[in-house]
Image 1: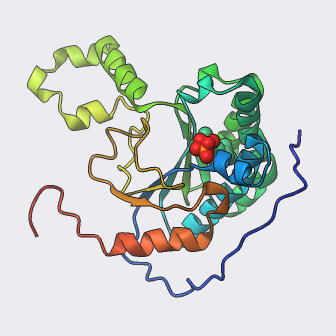
Image 2 (image 1 turned 30 degrees about the horizontal axis):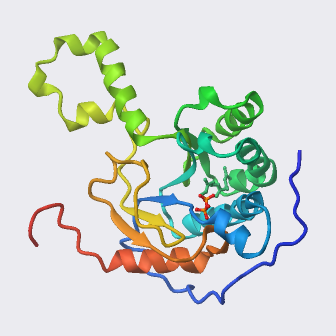
Length: 255
Ligand code: FPP
């Protein structure tokens, strides 16, 4: 299966980031990859052309993350609210993980990347689930970047699901209520065992969380750019990291 659009122009900025200081890079970067539709509209293309081009930007972000020794990259690929889009667009979005992995899995393996997901995969078409499971299996022993796709992900649903799992979990019946703390609760989220995002990037100029990682972003640093996702380059990623390095993180305390 291949989805092709012949008419994309490649925008690459001059890369001037050869000397980034590798200390104090965020461990976990989460990205709301926004602006695909607007990118396409600006060019008179169908919206899905923006998603297709966004796929290339996704791999650029993966390359940047491996280059700068990021440990976890969580990408918002499809939200629980995205089902409201027209069928044609939803069907196209469902094909993208398979298309992406068909093209880039060899490079991910070569770069020691481990593929994982958060979200309710059960609702996805079989061909999407199979491509994802295959990538997870083939990369499960890799210990480089954890590439974590949020697919059919919604943070409120994740929290509701966590509560349901806790109620069903017989092991918790021995706990006093006061023992149910943030750490215990976190273990019932999709992100169990993962550190919280240090840096959240959102492209396209929108400045909201859109039901992404509500619990996990409690102390994340946010970086917003007007760049539309299909135009996002390694330089943009670098700029976000440099900006992050200047932040003073106090977690509600004082310096
Ligand atoms: C938001 O832009 C983007 C999405 C809902 C889809 C994200 C998908 C990709 C970036 C492609 C790569 C995905 C994989 C799985 C490799 P929008 O459509 O809401 O843009 P708009 O706000 O300009 O309309």
